[in-house]
Length: 212
Image 1 (cartoon, one colour):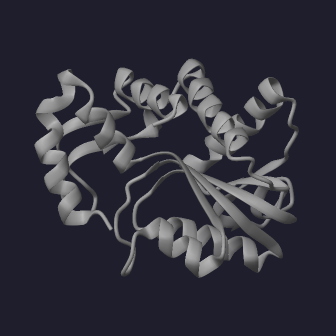
Image 2: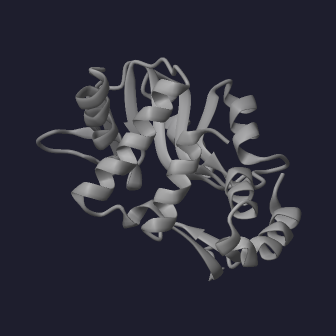
């Protein structure tokens, strides 16, 4: 595990973005962990989160023309990451995000920000089933832009239709999928941290059942 991954896991634990216990997910599934970047709801935490994204983008040498953030969590991610890339790395990339419904007056259309053109880096919080990212890719393609890469904070490494969602997305759309950390990174960290070892058995049981 590289230092960026370790620092990010510690950041999420320190601010309860990543928690362990027993949680009921939207799907009804019982999970031994919960991950929620929505808790980065002030300037300090959002800047730190954007910094991790920006550092991971640089580390992976991702090439793109603009950043796209799908509504709703992707809205603040796209804008804050764009700003962090400029402030810390002198990289000036435009960004945009979509509305849930097209606006018919004033600034019309489905997009806010730059006009989608060229290759995009889609930024979102997690990959679970992959459905929301598929919708973003198809939305961009319908508007004459290419989705070339995806960056998320956390890859849950769970099944999409038949395979792991991140693998299916990469194969189906011929795009590169990146994450700051994966479920494997988190479990590796747990194993090496005495204070978290009590969660190891539940995590391994969950992984054996749902990971693909």
